[in-house]
Length: 511
Image (cartoon, rainbow, N blue to C red; front, side, top):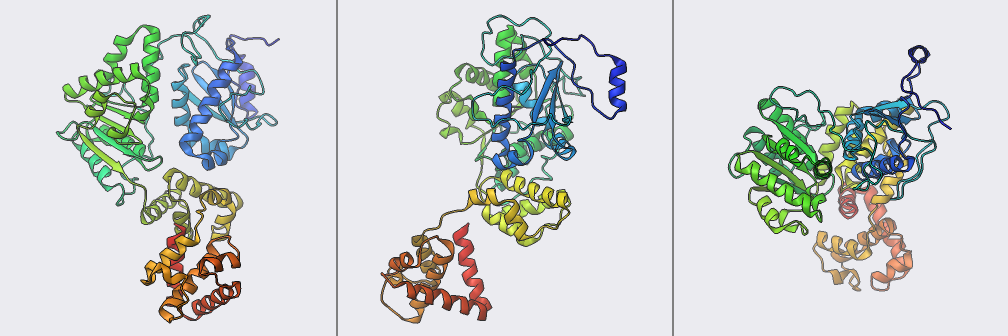
């Protein structure tokens, strides 16, 4: 049976510090281990969704929860390097996720696990697994026997607010210092959203820009722009109060207010701000009561001439599941979309990231990553982080071969399966011939050479056998395909311009 201690022995704590060990969190009143394990599993799952599988496996998979003492959650990692990396890059996000669980956690401590304790946590797959040892949390008041809301880990209590800064009245948004306008890479897909965000940061609540609605796919920069707006307003308008939170946090705070019977306090705290920023609004779909509260908050702020900034993964008209009155209000201001990144923008993002890491990354490696990882900017940056960290750990330079070795799992996931039909169409368009010429018996040079290029690319970009490739080119024999591959290889070695032409076609097909 475990014993609980209301205080620690100062002498033993001093001894631990003198020995270079960090003291363990204080023992606290027992919380059912299953509830805390479920909370930790949800937090890991949300973190995995935010950063992507590759980045999660590289940096966060080995996290374990030592426990929660008072308002501090203690997370363990097996090495100093991982501890420092997680502490500098993910501690704020972990704190926000804990606060969303509403158990009063105000701070995250990331430590190196004592030898033999840093066991990797089980994979998060929707079912919470019990931790390797009992986890306990300090409780200020006795928890109700039957919680009204599932997932609550602590009894109703008002979390202490940080001391308010000048002009902020206690609303201190948790902002990532990396996400500023200066660090945002602007390109064709995001230049309109960037310009709109800049305008709002310079002149909040200006006509035609309230609300500002940013939308786009995962990892394209919506959250970066929202943090940048908040930082710029804090700097340019220090008297303005800014409240930034995710839609999920908004919902949890509203539910907590209902539970504490303090909804008026909740309403007043939000309606007293000058700028309200809600990230990932799509989370409110299907949550009617929270939608209604947000609608009334929205109206009150806009009527009072206050700025609202919202982000989502779709435009207001496409957010089916939101009330019509809320959708129409969201679409009445400035709606700015962020398109999928282009190759040029991805290269620029990698260049900026490499500069911030002070890493020497060859241009060829950046171009390779930009052509392979085409969707999520977070995953693109995560891949570069992993590559640079690997090079630093082993004291090696970064090369294309090393990139393919270190990132083999990410690159395999992004390999696009090119079909022979796609190759034929792309080559036919490039050389201005008809698709039917690919299978025709014509042997004129202006037709035969593109046909040979298409066979060459089919051999190198698909897993089809030579006889299969031949069948797609008018039932030609496999020896014809072999001759085409050999001939194009010779021409590429002899003619640099021709080699560049074929290489361009290959890149166009691989992107």
